Length: 493
Image 1 (cartoon, rainbow, N blue to C red):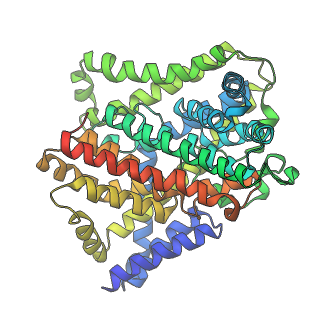
Image 2 (cartoon, rainbow, N blue to C red):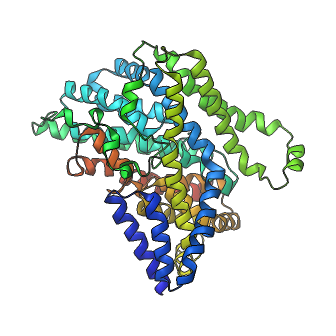
Image 3 (cartoon, one colour):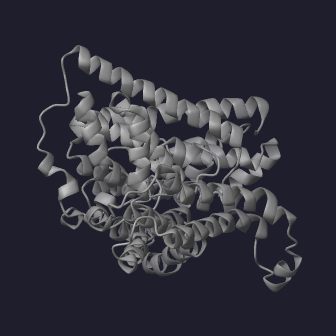
């Protein structure tokens, strides 16, 4: 009983202090130690950190560091080359200012689905969104929700093939790939996009009917003109929260970005390469290869659980090389861009790995057995329901979809796989539901992604959070329910 209470207390403390701006790098081990101490096992607190916590942390780094690193590097290359801006301008010019909300959503979706970090996208697109909304006289308070809808939702968790870290995390647990349950993913993604867009359009129409326009704002207070390092380090404490791979100095994007004109089609080449090459490797190249010799050379290697990760790694490497060789625009300082892209990956990967370490310590406590059994028994005949509840709850507590996914799968992944196989449920469906559910409650007010997005836009929770919550939590959870229902009735497709 005391052990279970200790877990609940430390989870609440983790949420509270994360919202207050403390870094998860120090929060996670402290809360893990407190959970052990509150459970009455005083002598185990230090080995729980050195062995359990650090063991889980290093294991996560071993599996996923290349994806965090390459994703951050690719996003930085896209931003500094001017390709991201070229894509944004191309979409805006095609749709026009009268479709401001749709334009912002689509630009963010194209960039994040192609592998660009959500924070690179948010910082690069905000100035364009601000001008569009002002020209269309749409309230500025809707900008964060429009950016969030395009970046934090369907391109991160639902659309098949997205290179988002969230879509990669279940691969080694379910032996799947990023294209898992593609049709259901498209259905879920369409629901998120359409309902989110309609919601924002309805809010804009209501504001117009009440005579509310863009509003008077001190644009100089936006984060676009403030050094991010003056903000709390934990404003980005889950830079990967909603993709992707974050960056530690957002203001540097504008500093390094090239203004040389680049056509929309040329700028789209690297993004297209990521998706197409990923698909070719997953469905054509790897299935035709014989890995027997490789298995002999590395007997402990789980090839089935690695192929999906290898596809993403190769795709991002090739796309990054192509982008550099093409020299879209003229690089102001390629060395600086590469170095910054590398540094951009560090905080997100260690934040998420620290949360995994915390989860491993929690899972080692006697009280976790009660919590685990309660979750697994929510719907014994349909593990999809139990899985969705576990993923979204932990994502909400940590304020991170990738953190919640990692904790849940590292502690319950094997149980869910066995339950799915016993119930005749395709692991691909388990993969897609897990990722989509993790993209539900992860944007509670303490989420690092939400805090940073509002800071970029120079707005407050009071002004914009309701609409962010609607398009990133309420509607995505509706999509999860639909996908679970369809998957239960008709199986994975």
